[in-house]
Amino acid sequence: MAVVVNVPCFLLMIFAAIVLLSTGTVASDPDMLQDICVADPASGVKVNGFACKAAANVTAEDFFFGGLAQPGATNNSMGSLVRGANVQQIPGLNTLGVSMSRIDYAPGGLNPPHTHPRATEIVFVLEGALDVGFMTTANVLISKTIKKGEIFVFPRGLVHFQKNNGDVAASVIAGFNSQLPGTQSIAATLFASTPPVPDHVLTKAFQVGTKEIQKIKSRLAPKK
Image 1: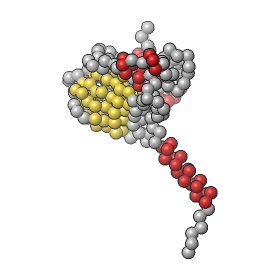
Image 2: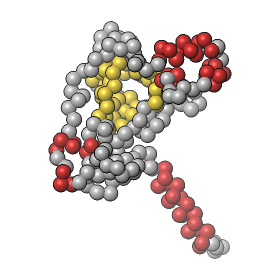
Image 3: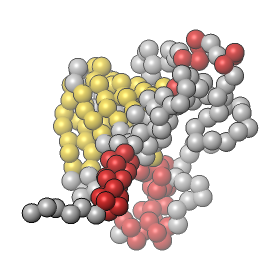
Image 4: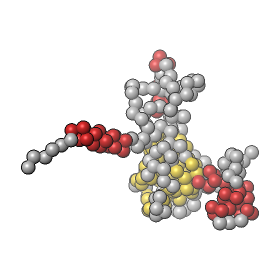
């Protein structure tokens, strides 16, 4: 028996499938449309990213950064230091959709729970060992201990952390599929924002009293 196909409906289905497939693959910065577009932060033009520097003014220094070569100081309350190598440090990364960072941890140091709203993160352990993990939207913890030479991935937008439970320093190199992945530290976002999140919101959310909320806020307040 012959099969009758409604051509307009069939074409519409194909178009819908293409749209779904194409939108599903856009998980990082938009594709570049030219060889280079070195960021010009001083430009008054506002775009999703940065305006391009004049090609005649582009140099090799626009694509270079030496700031991750050495370990950073970790003598702070968290015992860790994150140093970025994104478009703000390397203008040549503009439109390329990648960036890196180096994270150093003192013994017992923590990179506290945070998210990257614009990028997936992959870390490679340079030295030491770390307990790492992320939480899914179903509140399931995915965690593992990783050591020198090993890799772990944190999916885009999910809350994650790294903790050095060893007695020696540790460090990782992290890669991102965004020129500027952004970082939201959960504690700082909730307790040290400007203007502050109202106490009544936080007391309700955490099921504690105002004194506890004020105590946390005082400890996380930016140093003046």
